[in-house]
Each structure stands twice: as C-alpha cells, then as structure tokens.
Length: 205
Ligand SMILES: Nc1ncnc2c1ncn2[C@@H]1O[C@H](COP(=O)(O)OP(=O)(O)OP(=O)(O)O)[C@@H](O)[C@H]1O
Ligand SMILES: [Mg+2]
Image 1 (cartoon, helix red, strand yellow):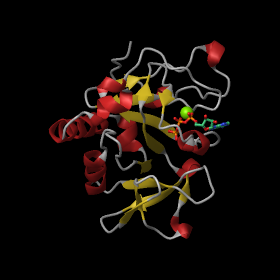
Image 2: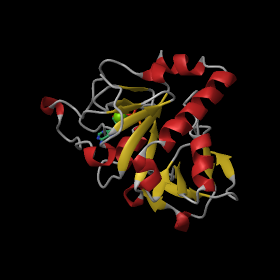
Image 3: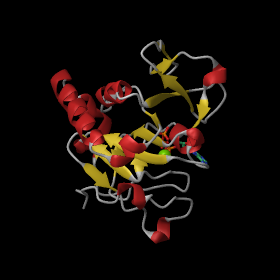
C-alpha cells in the first residue's frame, strides 16, 4: 500500500519532491558538516536524493552509494564522482561500478541517508524487507537519516529487535526529528544522536 502510494507519484511530483528534499537537506547542519555521506539511487518510487547529491558534489563533498557484495548481507559503499559509471544489480537498482578494493564499510561513513517504505515518529523504519540496511548498521554505525515522501509517514510501526532506527527523517516538506523508541522496546536500538540535530525544527508529533 505504501509502495503503491509512492509509485503513483508522476514524474512532475517526483521532481518537485526531489527539489524539496534537496532544500531540506541543505538546511540540515549534519548534512553540511559530515565528511563522508552515503546516498542511494532511487528505485520503486523512492524519493530521489539525486538533486541533493549533485549539489553536494558541486560543493566538493564526498558522496557514496551502497553496493551489494555477493554472498554478503552487509552493504559496502563506493564513492561517486563525476566520472562514476553505474550498472544495475540483481534487484534492478543502479550501483557504482568500482574495484572491490575501493569499497568502504558502513562504519567508515559519517552520515548515511536511507531509503524507506514507511516511518514513524520514533524513527522506526520499514524497508523493502531485505534487511540489508539493518545488517549494515547493526554494529558500528554513522548518523542515520531516513529520506521519504511525506505520504510515507505512519502512526506506528512495529519494530523487531534487529531493526535499526534513524535519528531523523527528511521529507520533501520538512525534517522530522525522531524521538527514539519507547524504553520498553529499546532492546538493541541506538539512542538518536540529538546533539547533531539540536536546533532543527521538528515537525513530528
Ligand atoms: N540482525 C538480524 N537478525 C536476525 N534476522 C535479521 C536481522 N536483520 C535482518 N533479519 C532478517 O531479514 C528480514 C528482513 O528484515 P526487515 O524486514 O527488517 O528488512 P527491512 O528493514 O525492511 O529491509 P532493509 O534494512 O534492507 O531496508 C527479517 O525478516 C529477518 O528475518
Ligand atoms: Mg528492518
């Protein structure tokens, strides 16, 4: 249902959303301050961080995209430059084609921007069901921020113990500063890094 909702957005709406998202990200201090930032290549109606990525590249920022390594659940990350070539992986998602020796681990990033199908105010996230991001950021993790269309917000998401929450969700319209999970459900979750988002407007709730 949520996937249908975002897939129903036409090209104009998607382009507007991408522009709105770029503007919101540009106003986020942690986005400006982070050295190594992972993006993703939009697929299945996901909000497109491409405009924000292009802006960051023109600012000289270092940008990465996830790469699936055969036989592994943990994603690795390849740097994207003006010369990067892409190909489609087995899920049909574009990936940078770079030599394995140049890939970095999730823990080496300063900030990762995550796609999602649904999110709630606690930063719980529904992904595409592969568990790739959960596996990648279950240990040493950078700041994690979800990107979504505003229409992907839900009142409540059931989180499993392996689900990794995000500290904020940035949409085409606003920044939702997430509160973290209620204590009773906190097993295995990391508290949000409130310091890095302090002072941001919080439209959640
Ligand atoms: N740390 C883990 N421990 C046990 N099982 C896991 C773990 N991470 C993922 N899984 C398995 O992977 C499946 C998919 O996980 P989940 O539904 O949370 O994916 P997702 O968060 O939607 O996907 P993604 O993280 O790729 O965006 C789960 O049903 C579970 O069986
Ligand atoms: Mg999950």
